[in-house]
Image 1 (spheres, helix red, strand yellow):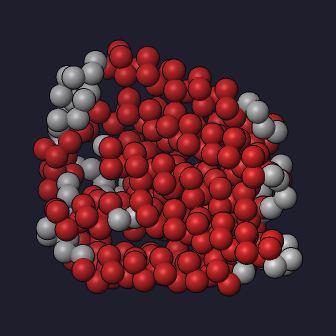
Image 2: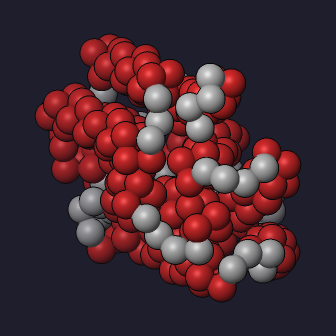
Amino acid sequence: MLVVLHLKLAEAVAQCLGDHLLAGSQTYREVTHFKLGQNVVGDLADHGGAVGFQFRLDAQVYRTANRPIPSGQVSPEAALVFVAATACVGLAVVLNFNWFTIWLAISSLLVVAAYPFAKRLIPYPQLVLGFAFSWGALVGWAAVKGSLGLPALVLFTGCVLWTIGYDTIYAHQDKEDDALLGLGSTALKFGGNTVSFVGALYGLAAIFWLIAGALAGAHLVYFLAVALVFLQMSWQVATLDIHDSANCLRRFQSNRDVGLAVFLGLLADKALSWFAGLG
């Protein structure tokens, strides 16, 4: 659970601050105090909301049965209080922004709530997870611009593809339990072709990130960062063993550095461009 939360935070930071830099034109103080707060706190609130729906499934899966709620360390009632509290914190942060951003952020709760049910209803629940995890790319842009733009939509698409890829790797740890419980999973759907599918998803994600940068006027440093990130993603694919849970977990964990590396590349690109007078 902690690994997933670390990855979620890294992805939220990368998306919200990266989207801000793509959108441009506010001060660094506004970025740190508002965008980071909105996405990180808001994503924690979203994560808390999803926990309430997920714990019944976790109790039936060997690897997750010892998590706090399924194991009885935390009661469902206490979890509900936590969900309500984090939802209020998330709402308080979101209310600092324009109405378009507020409604866009609130709408993400529908996607978050749908994910546990998607596992029972469709064979590709990671697509719904990708929408939930990547929503910050849209909210971050809207908070600056007051509307959605093509760079944000392209960035969002790349993040969705990336999420499907790394969560497919993660899902291979539970594929036997998922099959017994009748749950959908891209790990089950892709099966022996997982390496090819994940490679394609990662490749498309990197392409969409490059296009988003080009549309937003990014410079060389950002594109080099994405290229380096793609090499890391290629390592994941080339060394992936879907029959080894430890191997899958290690490659899944490495994705917490991917989004952060893209963001740092964009931040460096923006800083160097500013010093060079390129805007």
